[in-house]
Image 1: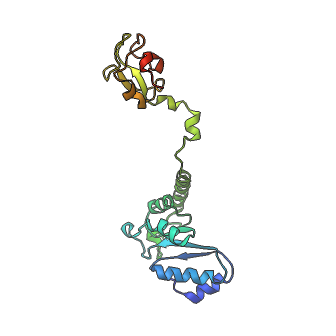
Image 2: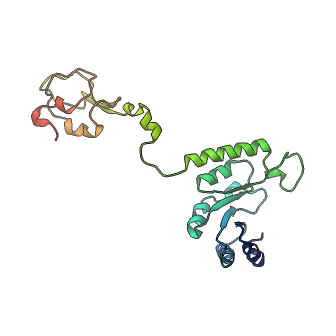
Length: 223
């Protein structure tokens, strides 16, 4: 409600303390004006909270995809002021980049108060914090490389490779009937299946043997 109180924002920002601006009910121009007001005092320690100023807030009105939008638009830390019931919305917000979560806490929802209905009790609050921390660990960075855990286990050998699935005599051709991509990864990479089909075997090969280049006749070997 105070985002449009420009004199208040100017006064608070002038103290040099970090400021969290909740954006409930605010338009983009109003958010810009609030940020500009704070920054003109020399205070750059700002953060924004995505917020739906209804109590409790409906999940379909939260629009969490606004979080990465605000982050890109204003280049500031973005969080969520969460007035929904339960903990799902806060956890999802963290997965989308929220670095601050504001959530109401009550010792008991049986105690009547204006925010009892959407507040968390201590056990629920603890669960939310634990799941948020787990979510942060699972979304810490973009990584398309092999993880340390993957390197330290033997799981890579359970990938597929080329195997002989029927007995093949010397001079016979590798075909779709006698050659398959199966586990484990002791044979040629599956990408070479088309390269070896219709090529001659350089030796007798027993069913269940992983295929390597030495099993192809000299004229058929791939360089």
